[in-house]
Length: 117
Image (tube, rainbow, N blue to C red; front, side, top):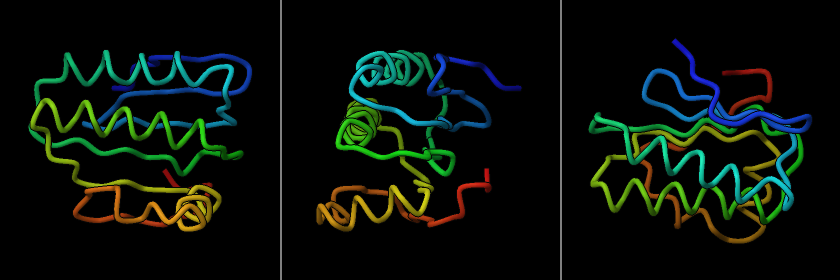
């Protein structure tokens, strides 16, 4: 079952199968709402592991990285194990360019095509 946590004309955030799925073109205008929606879900989540799937992210910016970092901080504060972070090619390139690959404490970081989910 999938729960839509946030949706507007540019982006959708869904929760399903112990994971947050971000799709579309997040930017500075919707980053605070995306961060809050993900944090609220993580705060209420009762599992021990969580994943973040950003394969559907079509446009990247530092705002998207900030959202992901907020989710990671929340997961860490709740002692959730981050099982996997799956990134679109564009997200991976931005994270590598910013030299932030070591910041993401996932056991497995997957790099997948934008069409994968």
